[in-house]
Length: 315
Length: 244
Image (cartoon, rainbow over all chains, first blue to last red):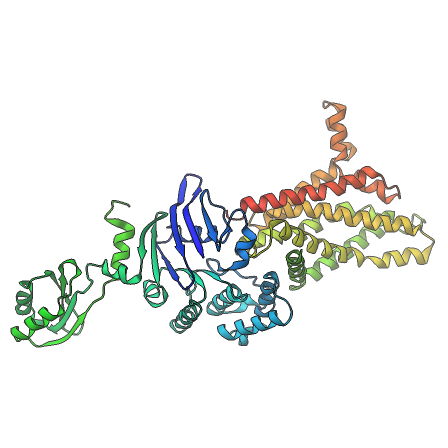
């Protein structure tokens, strides 16, 4: 549905987006990750036709965003960064305006608006000026305007920013439900969100794509992928540490003190291989009583840091 | 077209969503009345016409119209809603036209609400209602020209106050360029052709000739081309500056 080829955007001397290429098809939820200022918003703005690219092309369902912007805009539902809204309008009037702009009329319009209000639970605030609403409601009104016309393509710039954990959960559920029939791009800097809703993640740093793969791939890139954390009473720690350090496949062992007086040994495998079986056998043999053994799947934030501030020598 | 009408509706309603619109209208009516009676000597002249009423419109609009125009684009840019608007399936031209006509309609309402003065003059004597109608149309058109300038300038900035002051300043230049005191300054050194051009840019000269009942094709062409020109510049400004 969405195809981007060598898309670049230059603001004066700054190259905000640097030859980004990606494609998103129906049924995919692409999580767009990156530090602030990496070029996520700029890329999204080019796909939605708000900014024109300096070079490269972006097409949505075959329509080029610069040559046929109106067709693209018709297909896309967009939540801009910060969810800007007309504060003097009520959600009812606002959604009515957006639906009318989207070309919906009559019973179809009323039906779609009612459904959207239902989905995002806006019924209680329908007739209050948007300015007076809480941050969570504003964000939901922003989401409502993006989905009111049931678009094929959904581009959401930080859809859960400013929501409480319950609301975040609801919005993620909503995205998951919609994902089957749509192509969705969400930008976020919350890494769990990627695990929770995305089928694919793209990390962008300094305007360039530094990772493109599934959230699972991303975790496998973590050096803590398949690491095993063992929690035990503090005095025993040296004994167990010596026992496991010698195991084949163990790269190194890290030690961290816990608040409750216990300690955790994190056994990091070489090359992310599975070491749980050997390790648990070794623990049993050593006879040290342990409180808890847990396999880690990898720290996204660590991979994220590594990719974006990088070993590749980028600042 | 449908999108432009939808933009028009929203913008028009936006004026009345705060009490500001009513305050504007009341001030406009009060001022136009005060000017007519106290500075235009409406009664003392002993003539049944609306000359003393219309003669102050170019000056009234100088303050009133930029105040109506300032929010058109500056507010959208400040609040970021321009990103919302310009990613809806609407062309920039449609958005520019929708907004312009909404503000113009608002000005039209303010102007139409001065109708008691028309009733008054008809009660007191037998004025030439044709001239009055043409004068109203001319006043409305001139308001449109001020508005197009104001809308254009509103697209330049995120700050409504800056938009107001700049628009009033530019409108002031267009207004005073026909005054003899300004022209005399140019006449001393500039070639005649240039003086004529400067004089020809004045709202004052174009408007006054119409209110006396003389409809000159040049006046019609002046306003009829100034408005589209400003709106075209407005469109270009929105396109180039929306992301800034």
